[in-house]
Length: 112
Length: 115
Image (cartoon, rainbow over the protein chains, first blue to last red):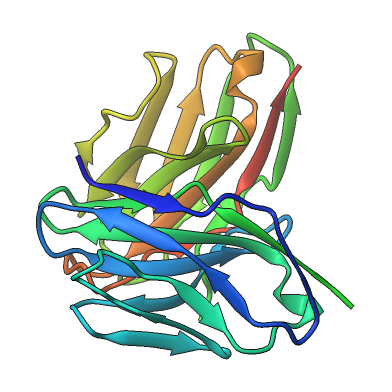
């Protein structure tokens, strides 16, 4: 079935470091892909999305490119801040199943 | 614009009691989803509605769980009787339209503790 695999966390970085969180997916069709972020005590917030191959989603300095050939949607940021500390979820949506399938989440901790 | 509104934010109750969680989706959104989040199992989809009609409830853990959506602006998730293993954060989300490109918008969740 459809699934999403994220890198294990926690990821610990110093402020201004470069961030990559890996995400790969398995799907029988052509899903839409999302990154959500969850801050402590809050719900999930949409960070960025891409709906077709080679699309790049971007928001708040974060970017991810929909790579069909490698079935990946890695999240990157050039310079992280302490305020980026949160849990990041990669997710895919298939119209055929009408479900948003989440990865297990990756906790990011940014130290000053 | 108001986002998805859930109530209560926190609920602590004793085993065996009935628990009712409430959700008000974003106006104009016609799909609504209930999720449960735990450390062990991550995010699980419990049930979703489209145009107030339950479409898939295969994620509902057992008969103790039930969900309703009497109108486009309100949904409930009920647990009766509650058990300690039901302790989790329950999220409601809503989505405009059926196209995949439209993202789901999440509420802040209800943190449920069953003693």
